[in-house]
Length: 383
Ligand SMILES: NC(=O)c1ccc[n+]([C@@H]2O[C@H](COP(=O)([O-])OP(=O)(O)OC[C@H]3O[C@@H](n4cnc5c(N)ncnc54)[C@H](O)[C@@H]3O)[C@@H](O)[C@H]2O)c1
Ligand SMILES: [Zn+2]
Image (cartoon, rainbow, N blue to C red):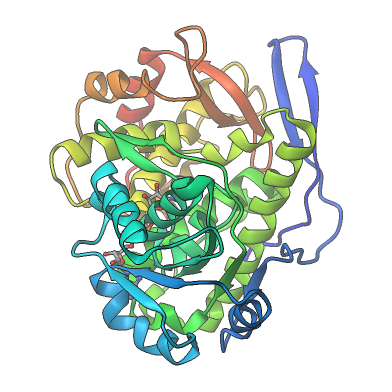
């Protein structure tokens, strides 16, 4: 397992390349989990909050999988009169305006007022959708997140972003909203298969690569399906700490530090949007894993990353490919590029990406060209 560090970030300006560098400054090895995030074996933080705030109504949003695997564990801890919104579908397609509309409709039908609480029980799609619906209804209801996938525990539930997809584009509409609380209940991971665990591991690898100089020596391969859920606790805590440190810094300095969390996502989101349009089964972490591999290869060639030699990231890239293989074919580089041109981080018509001038040294806003993307895709090291 890689070491990780409590983070502080600082900027320098590289005169030679005219690039602003964002540095991660290791301070000490410790865990800093925000106070509203709880490792919650018996949901005591949630039940304490319910006792203290006595919400006028409580509604739990689940999908068919979390209804089956997670709701029975949660139900005994809920107050009498709790209502249940069980979505008929699961996966990326629920992050839609139609599903948000259905939740608003149900809140209306239940007579939800501003003292109500929405509990999101699910992976990143349920937490993104429910938090979006709650944060917009009556200008903002309280909501509590119960992430049930590794991906949601290490990333999606953390950091206060909500969202739905729109017109085939990922997370096009959303809000920033802080949940009343987040409970990480490790036994929820018991019912996830190895592919879902690897999917979550992708975002953990992202956090490690952007923050930890030693990440270059990491190998993340391991028998996912054999690992005890508790073995993931360290990864979950370190990811929460790294992401929270980045988000805090972003709020404090308004300098856009949060963009580093998009490492692997410019290409990853383009691939995901394409897969969505083709109705292909591609998971967010799988798209991001491939996007990170492209970004690592591009870092080796980009002038903003002078410290990185050609091939420097090949071992890490191979390890990612073996752990999180792509389950589907790829579109052409032209199709990907068109989708990358719609990315929210772009400025002045230029496509910007997060690259790495070495592990733990992310470069914000590196302007990239179609040729560079195509070259990187063609030169990815095979798994
Ligand atoms: N808001 C953010 O900051 C942020 C960050 C990262 C990712 N995301 C979003 O998260 C989403 C991906 O999240 P995800 O990978 O958790 O997808 P998901 O919510 O679709 O969950 C994956 C699958 O696992 C099932 N599932 C969930 N919990 C289960 C359990 N305990 N046992 C068995 N099956 C279970 C779900 O029904 C689904 O089929 C993407 O839409 C992505 O954009 C958001
Ligand atoms: Zn992501």
